[in-house]
Length: 204
Image (tube, rainbow, N blue to C red; front, side, top):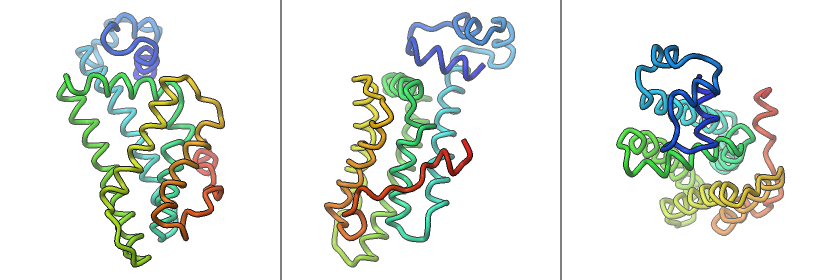
């Protein structure tokens, strides 16, 4: 049911959908959805929670699988943001739908904000650790915010333009690494160096 709801949101956004739309997509009755979720609002929030939880699992797994080096962890986090399981067209459409409604729906705003702040804080921690390791004075918060903005900018560009060819994630990762190379050239200067595909390593 959640996958069916996700597909409907991806096609139609949040404002115009009904429980019947989702039931038709799932091939089940209205009553079955009502039994499990009680209200449309609970079902829709469950879609957001599923998307956010899956993203965070991939993102945290990427950092955990890397070496002890802050630079390698940053590389893996960049890879995770454009992983095939994360940056797929359908999921981007759903993220955009929730971000559009978040200012008006407290539950969406809270869930999205928590996820964004945790991601940003993790980036800032790694940038601070790398700066300390390299003994360079930088504004870790500003660098982390810049990297986060580039990541999301690439997502938005792909969604709005429909440019979602297999080359798009590669170009987006390259852009992020080029940005990091401006501050840490010895770690990110060779931006052609890529980490292994996360989906392949996870057996997806």
